[in-house]
Length: 229
Image (cartoon, rainbow, N blue to C red; front, side):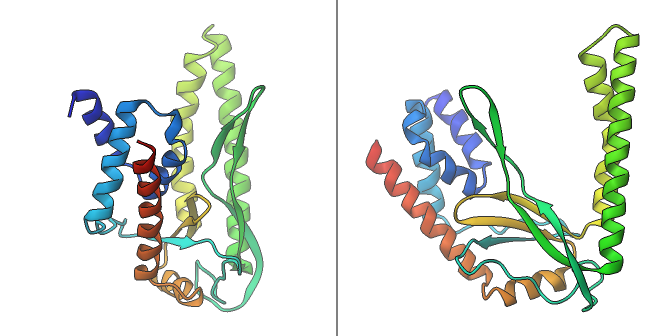
């Protein structure tokens, strides 16, 4: 194995299963060394036992299969666990960039998740505050950039620094986050483990079910890649 193939192999070994599956769908566009590394990594994941997912002690990750009957949520607030639910709050997944001839389109999923009225109002209020803060930070960064006659570096760096507190604000109020997605799965993150277990139960899935569906998709991708070599 040459150094280039080894470098691709290291990169692919750090990628999530759904990222490798999307990459395998674009197999014909990859360089030969990238194809060899991709096939080797898929084969490794087929043969080896899936590594246990490392989770943050404050969050529970659930990769939910996307099914025709949709995704169901427990009849309790994901933040405080109270059963008196009100309207849902929209949560957006990570976006996928779609490169077109004249523009770049960003696709994402948006899912409404029921909350109690008190938590819903808290999340909505914090989101408005964050939006106002980011607008003010962008205006300040751009203004200082003009004053310092640096129209690119200073605004970008200053805005990045000023935006750091936003991460803490979101984490302190929201108990659910959506991660990446593809045609087969969508990733959820729950702060409350009890809610996460109820979520898996109401959707009739277990970690074993999810792992089985994932390995099936990897096997299909490996068969496709191996046949194209």
